[in-house]
Length: 295
Image (cartoon, rainbow, N blue to C red; front, top):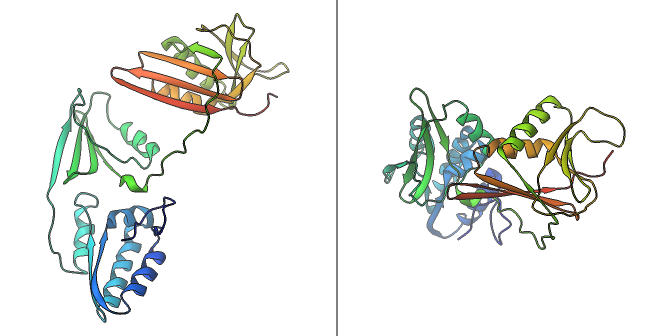
């Protein structure tokens, strides 16, 4: 058994059509047997449908002169009906698994692991619908296929990814001590977002403290510049050197968590910051690496 994935796994096959074709061609050149290939939707997502259709045709061609049976397995709901119909024309269909749809209500009482390959794409789709939405999870067996999101007028559909193709973030070997803890209030969030919008070309914000008073400065430099200064309250009284972080990323994180009940920004003099949010029963944590020297 070989795993088709981008992950650095021993004996894995990268999900490129050239790699797969050569592997299949090499294996079916002698003897006989059954070759089971599961997850054609992954190939479509990585390579595009038209390229995968040509790939399937080529596999059908080379298998006709061999003693091998090749089974290509895909989950319903991962492609539209026209695409499935075009694939089925290339080879007979053995069976089709029924899809089910689960409503994700406000309590989020369901338990399911879903793969979101592009958060940017999902965020853009969410911008089409109103804030008051209903979300339905389409599944084939126990596999999550798509999210259907609708408001009172519009609806969007987001195709989920197989979790195996999403690379896990590297684990931090050692997290430094965070000397400074800043209370992130709704007022701070609004002021930072507004300030960053006003200084759109500034890509850094700087944390400045004298041990008693602390402030976030967008556009700080050693010379006189356009800047936005936001005083903040802290849970600790620590004196650390001025340190800057990516203002664009920080704004995106704040914008995505505007409804948080509580949040704290932790800053380490070793060049790392993290911010934690809490909303109802959910929490999230983001890390930021220092953005280099101050101008």
